[in-house]
Length: 260
Image (tube, rainbow, N blue to C red; front, side, top):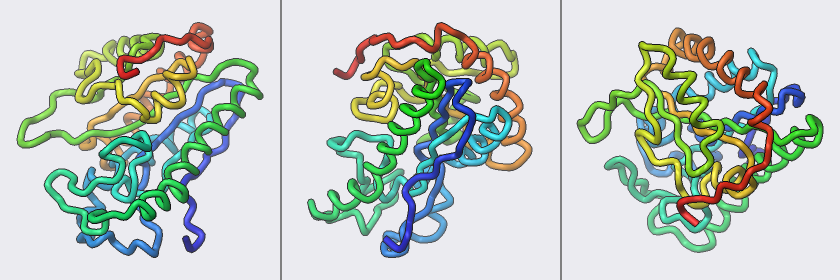
């Protein structure tokens, strides 16, 4: 494994009881996997990671002083935002690109990637949430950050951002409202994806435990360069601070799931 660490924990003050997650923050691979048989340009694309999210997350952590957990491996190796039994956990084909090292894939290699990368990441998420909860003495609000392409299969996506959620509306509806207060923004409600996915990070750590949460998707072309990243940090910092200061978002409530 050559010292490759599958996650990074950004330390922060637990008193605000807010945890930020960035499943797809990085496009890195352990040296032993080479390039998975792919050209270098593949790792600059959305198929490898969520463009812009690492810098937005670091900016928010610096501004708010809160902790975060970042995934340090490319989703092309194994996707931390999928359940262990999800058929898209290790992609053979992603947005038209075949991943040679992922097909065929032995059961032993699948287990190896789970044990060395996927499970350690989720253990870090669970540990960070539990520690913030213990030290703040209240259930933390969990915000997961992702980014999406400006177009899909030739069709433009009008949303600047989207908030994904399953059946717990608490944080998601407030976040949609706060973002939509800016008339310049088009904000998707469970767009461009549906927030109900069995076994994904939010389902596993929040929906099934009753923690308030929301997944925020930002369009990649808006955070692909430094000015856009700074603009979104400026926009999101006061919004997340206001959510974290809301006592209603520090209660355990089991709302179930549309996928259970």
